[in-house]
Image 1 (cartoon, rainbow, N blue to C red):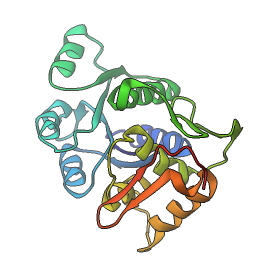
Image 2: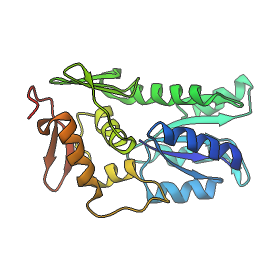
Image 3: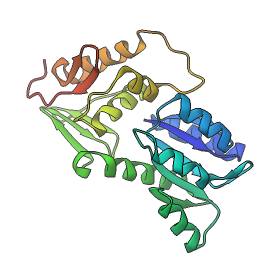
Amino acid sequence: MRVLLVEDDIALAEAVCGYLRAKAFVVDAVPSLAGARAALAGAQYAAILLDLHLGDGDGLALLPSIRMLKERPIVIVLTARDQVTDRIRGLDAGADDYLIKPYDPGELLARLRAAERRRSIGNAPLLQLGSIEIDLARDLVLRNGAPVLLTQKEWSLLRVMATRPDRIHTREVLQDALYGFDDGTDSNTLEVFISRLRRKLGRAHIQTLRGLGYRLAFSTTDE
């Protein structure tokens, strides 16, 4: 899952990025509205963590352009403004959630996952693919009841597909889920991770649609 953090407190941004990256999220951080607009023009994000008090304006000024995106990301406002009127204003402007500073990173993670589940099919954190069970709430994958060990990149890729299992996910979307601004990539890297996931989950559970992308398959076999 690729996340854009819009935060002008450098120390806080580094701490949040480090925490979320350790939880298998891909995170880009920018300190301004201008940086956020440039990032949104160049990549597709599943979530935006948005500070309100920025050097070049109010973070809420970004919400109208976010609402116009074809694939609208989750927006969680992060701010020191703790008045009820401020929260109402943020939610009315289109934010999905609102978190008051200082906040615990564990609570931010829980809010992010909860918002993600609300966007997923059936609002359910559990997905059953034959003998494979994917638990988005606990970052857990089971195969025939036994845990499947995934790397952070493998989990990031699987999370995108499992959140919207009805959808064909293009190469571009999946690449965005794997890499941030500062990560170098090879042209065949995505195929490498898809191949690794197929070995761990069973080939039948990830379907290739040539020229379109990939999606999860609700197969009853583990071939």
